[in-house]
Length: 177
Image (tube, rainbow, N blue to C red):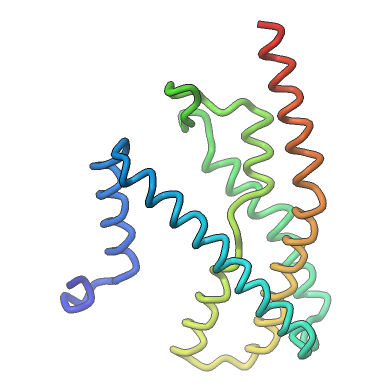
């Protein structure tokens, strides 16, 4: 209906999902569907990463230059963490023990660093390039693939030790209180 009215379907689906979630936050069906969607998201992310790996063996990084590397490293190490830090500013809350509590400073920093998955970028670039032509198309794809691979490797290496330490610190804090 949104597209028939010349609206943006993606935003309409987002608003609809947020409205439904707000209406049935504690409903058993909602909790079950959340688990299904979470598993489906992981499966699709793995599938996309498989295709990224296939693209790597087919020369996806051939057009990558130092500018693309700089863009990718900046996105993963600076831009995304800063955007996450701002998005998680004090006043944002998380659920813990059925009570709303603010994120601790370290949790906020870790959440901002790991950020959101970037595989959706592939969809947006594909869509944008289907709507127009651009002379730097191969460079853009190479930069995008590099950024995703850099993020997956970096975060894959760091997530276990960082989360282990965070959990150990939480347990120590709980024992002391």
